[in-house]
Length: 280
Image 1: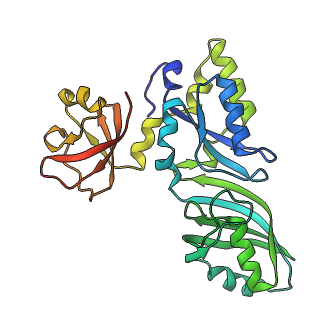
Image 2 (image 1 turned 30 degrees about the vertical axis):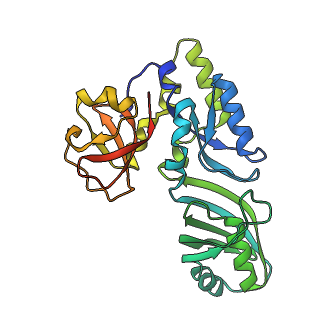
């Protein structure tokens, strides 16, 4: 259930799930969204290549600081590739299954990260439909896995393959059926300015949704002021049962519905966790 803040307040700490169109960079999409809302800051969770469409969560203002916590979750895609040989569907299926599990992948030449081999996990890489040399596929992969490179590496085993179409249908907790086209977002914003907020309110996701991916903990009212000033979270300040997180695990700290911040668990007799991000 969404917290019923005024829209103007919600925009200071919220996320909108954008359906990215083909032909725009992720940065350009972000820029368009920022301009629509006249936001001080906007940032996306996970870059998509210009030709790739689909789920691109965009955060506003202070919610941009949560980017790294959301981006580490798995991504799901559907797409099309063209294979260069006359391999049968059964043979192709067998070769694709070899990429499930742990793989070693070097980022493509055009990527912005250092081109070194990295271990990545592929939970799913399978055929949806094969018509001649055009193959529709679906994949569920660890964040930071390059689908274009996955297909290229498959091609090295089967006589060549290249990606011709790709759409992201899920990025962590953000799903395709809850995404919105840029034009729809702009229309909802204009309606809000005209006094009708229903459409925009349904689109804006309070960033407190972080508790869906990070263990949440409730703290006592009297601890809030000092916690918002960056003070460590003491075990005696926990209002709920103490979480069982291991050292370095993360906690989303709340006082009732109020989000305090993200804390990292440490090994200490009295201190439970130290602040990584505080919403003050």
